[in-house]
Length: 55
Image (tube, rainbow, N blue to C red; front, side, top):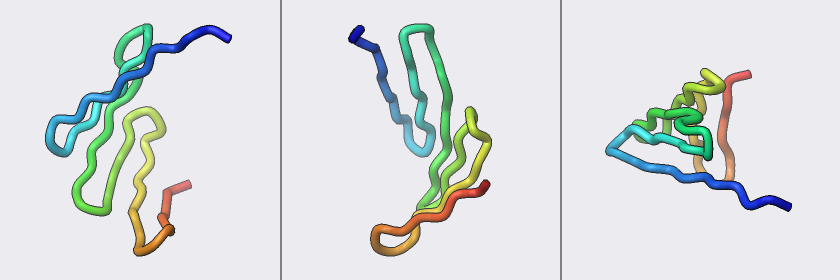
């Protein structure tokens, strides 16, 4: 099994995800709401172990 490089950098509400080939996606999180550039979906963290994600 090959070793894979993955790294996450966070700058305030912005999160950048890197792989061996460069920037793979970026996201935005404000409070319980977040958005991801790769999937282009919204999600909301709910109380306890629950969460909601757009289909």
